[in-house]
Length: 141
Image 1 (cartoon, helix red, strand yellow):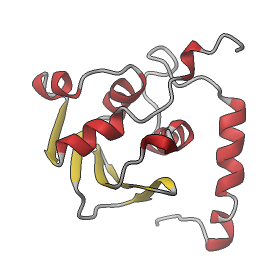
Image 2 (image 1 turned 180 degrees about the horizontal axis):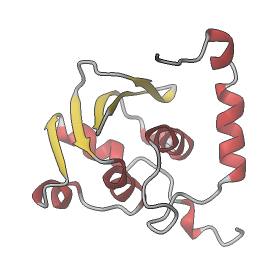
Image 3 (image 1 turned 60 degrees about the horizontal axis):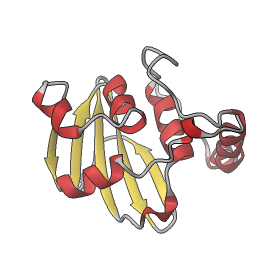
């Protein structure tokens, strides 16, 4: 059986994202968790996405046993579970996404070492991976 939110439940998304931003001013660090769940990863990505990046496009994120279509536009970053045609594709583990986004691991390094594979618009993918706020330097935390 597959569980999914109703339209009424999805109306809570802005509230949940705001609570996530309030409760977690720090981006996940390498020692914060061995690996986030796919859903926690998507929430972390949506909470730390820099909407001023002026990106447009789609990235298919393929994770072991799961997949998300990430859509970037003027409204920010949206994520939909499932496979779909996209401008770029990133296939890897959740931990690798954490490393690429929050630890700024080089995409080329991840591909070279065999922990990630990519296809499509690599420029878009690189720009997306760099378009997340790094809150670790906040001195007020």
